[in-house]
Image 1 (spheres, rainbow, N blue to C red):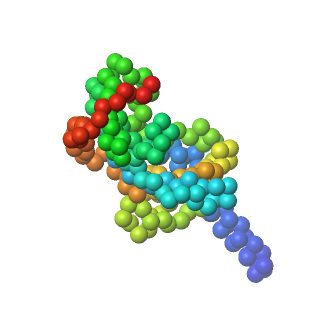
Image 2: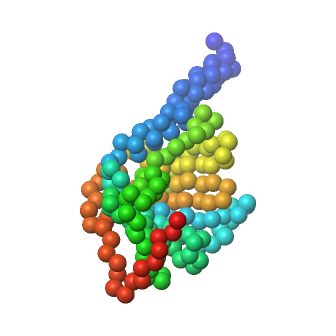
Length: 216
């Protein structure tokens, strides 16, 4: 066999091997969905930065925290809201009462479970939904810093229809970063099925707090 022919055959073999090892985006996203769906309790800490069309930050990143314990208890901290300008709110649901707290002005409100909509009772459940998974593709594999680890190997998956991109931990199938046309979110802490104290889902109005009407 001539050297050139051997080289061509070798090149074809290498290309074929790469094709076989190329991860499937739909399968990766399926594993992600199964991972979060099977979690009975979890805690996520994230930083989100809003960006312009060129990807430049429009404001400093804002932190947020989400904790959930099955079947429906949750705590969400650091939610931006247009209802109360200049404020961020926390939501705490203990299965019987939904509490809203505004730390900056030390105001709070509450609503009983029977006064809530189904969305109010389930908003704390973080379940990734990939409507356009069929159009997704793996751009590359790369390492990013996450959760105190200097480098975590990730699949970088891009969604053709929405234009979003997610970084998926190759070992645990956690979402560690998500970019869209208007924002970039980095998950600094991802704890799934690690024990969470029940005290986290209790709320006692701080001293001097003012009670206000629950927004509808």
